Amino acid sequence: MRIVHTIPELRQALAGATKTAFVPTMGNLHEGHLSLVKLAKERGGPVVASIFVNRLQFAPHEDFDTYPRTFERDCDLLRSVGCNVVFAPNEEELYPEPQVFKVIPPPALADILEGEFRPGFFTGVCTVVLKLFNCVQPRIAVFGKKDYQQLMVVRRMAQQLALPTDIVAGDTARAEDGLALSSRNMYLSEAERAEAVQLSMTLRHVQLALRNGTAANLPALEREAMDGLRSRGWQPDYVAIRCRADLQPPTPVQREAGEPLVVLAAARLGKTRLIDNLEI
Ligand SMILES: Nc1ncnc2c1ncn2[C@@H]1O[C@H](COP(=O)(O)OP(=O)(O)OP(=O)(O)O)[C@@H](O)[C@H]1O
Ligand SMILES: CC(C)(CO)[C@@H](O)C(=O)[O-]
Ligand code: BAL
Image (cartoon, rainbow, N blue to C red):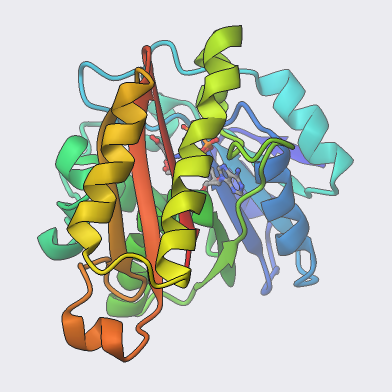
């Protein structure tokens, strides 16, 4: 496995490669990231993973400075699953001057849900993802469904800008109790970690209510789910039942027609903000 820190080194490491598969990350890797690398490996070409904590997608009050950075361990894990190249640029390399050209995704997709609570987040994500794509020039790129809206936004960007990169979705890897693996889980205290499973349980409850047809009124079901979390000491940002295709609330006609849905949630437990979702 080669570890490179600059764009010229990366280009040299990938010279002649035509089937590169790419897994962008912010590091502090866990089994979820590794499952994406394994999926990327299945395509047969060289696999590149990037590790870069992207300042552009963090709001000033967010955890950019404290975001866990565990580079040596990350490299060991990537090596263990057969990653071929680790691209770990520093800020100077990726943003040698203020990044004034930005990719602004459409508000209908990017200013809702995560974008409502993290304004500018998806502009930061799209800008760095496009820039990383231009560095790596991958044939495919793998994103996790855990960040469902991010996957949708990146997929739309790739489609609308005719990028030569197919966006592949990886399933959410979970702990045994159901908690979605996430770098930010390490912020949880022991008591919070035990409670954290309630987020996925809430989603499962909503999924069940929808499957059994016991929920006529979606906003009431969403409110009930948020109240349930609140009563346990969480501060939910949203629990939202949306169409998978565009993340908009389903119309009655769409519900009648069995439009594929997804339930998404974000909630704070103590100082830690967790997100999760389930396709229905
Ligand atoms: N549990 C998981 N299963 C599958 N993919 C995941 C999982 N968690 C994260 N990913 C994916 O890994 C990629 C890199 O994500 P990132 O480095 O932000 O990790 P993270 O664990 O989501 O961190 P954070 O706590 O900041 O959300 C993204 O495509 C993300 O969707
Ligand atoms: C895609 C990404 C690596 C861009 O910084 C980040 O948003 C993430 O880790 O999901
Ligand atoms: N996992 C998405 C990146 C972020 O939360 O900043």
